[in-house]
Image (tube, rainbow, N blue to C red; front, side, top):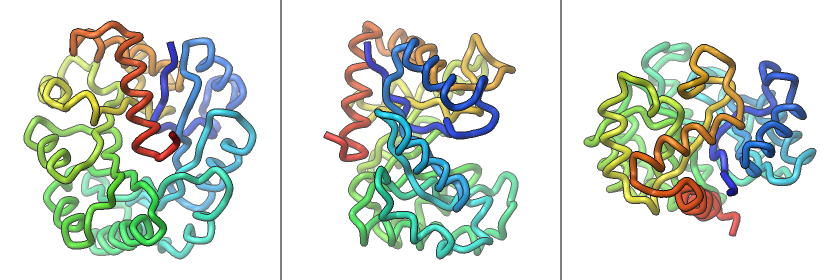
Length: 251
């Protein structure tokens, strides 16, 4: 079995035992490939360093909506670095509003433009901002390879993502007891448009809730979703891994 974590922060200092230990634990669990995702200049540089240090890791360079106030120009120069395969995570987060909403929208639009100009996939973070997220995407033009990371919507939001040709990535939240709408979205998402992720060190799935998440725990989310979709785990792993290769143009 070979699993592909489509979104993690494996470079993060909170990884149990450090990055090397987290990578080893992931391999032992069958997670042999990862996209390490940046949220600002420093973490994007860390993602690039992880991609350089380990086989099977690629980097995404982006400015998270929390960091939008720092300006997209802080990360543009990193997009041409070796191992960089995507722009993001970019988007809107109206739950915390760590950056003003108009600044978030400007930074999101700029990163959509970068993805389109450089023909790179786009990784989207959206929280409590669905309508504005779709409005900005529609105004700028959704890139051909767009991933809604850590999808937290229900069936309606999933359909809106799918209508725009996007991939939908499910995290450990889908295993949470209260996530009925999210599970309904996972049931309707076509298998060829579904990705899986940990978003480690955040959002550890059942049975690891309350602990620091790590890429190895992707196996638990994969097993849960395979059961939900009536597939063997190895079948589900193969499909979602192939989808991730296609989404990030790694094939």
